[in-house]
Image 1 (tube, rainbow, N blue to C red):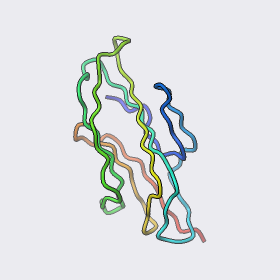
Image 2 (tube, helix red, strand yellow):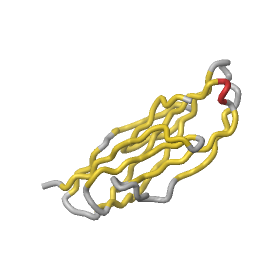
Image 3 (cartoon, rainbow, N blue to C red):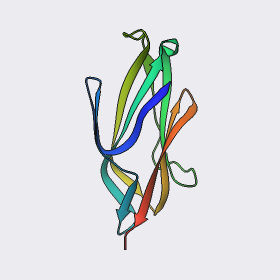
Image 4 (cartoon, one colour):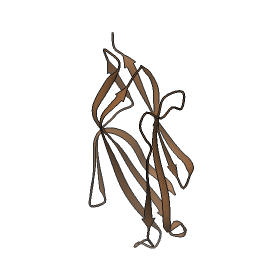
Length: 130
């Protein structure tokens, strides 16, 4: 399995296997805490080889710098069929968030797990604006 894209964005959408991503970012500046970020999306594109066909579990966590979960992990399964091109199958998934609450400035991270193994992380920095 290869990760082609894993990003945090203002907006993302899967349109018939075409992934649209607008406004990727890794920092939020705010004047006060706690703060609720109005909306954002995780956009991901994964590529599976022929030998990786079958059911795969995924899990997405949002944690603070101490490893505490900010939201309940998002979990599910995806079934990868035999590739139509004979070599690989690509899948997109988009997870939209509304009103994510952050209690304090610092480093947060989205973590992606596939079949129980950590695959990638996205840092998100929350800064107190002056």
